[in-house]
Length: 87
Image 1 (tube, rainbow, N blue to C red):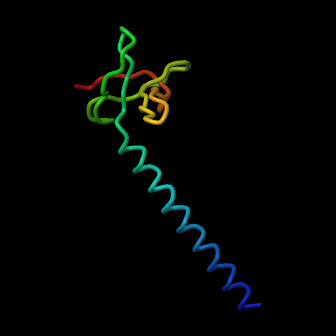
Image 2 (image 1 turned 135 degrees about the vertical axis):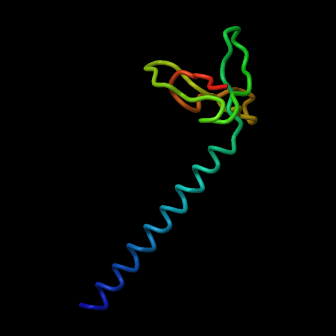
């Protein structure tokens, strides 16, 4: 019984560590992408650094930032909200 309990604990710890690493890598990849915003003329411009140059305020139907998909050549929504510039 003790061996089974130890094995289950080892699996649980390994699974938790793997999940933490995968989440961290995903967040870093999202931060590394260049974020764009849609201007009033409909063109896309570089937004800058989140929480330094801009923040995304809550907005029910708006899109705060976009990322460029080089495979299709289009801009895809990245974050929901309304962009507010800090600088």
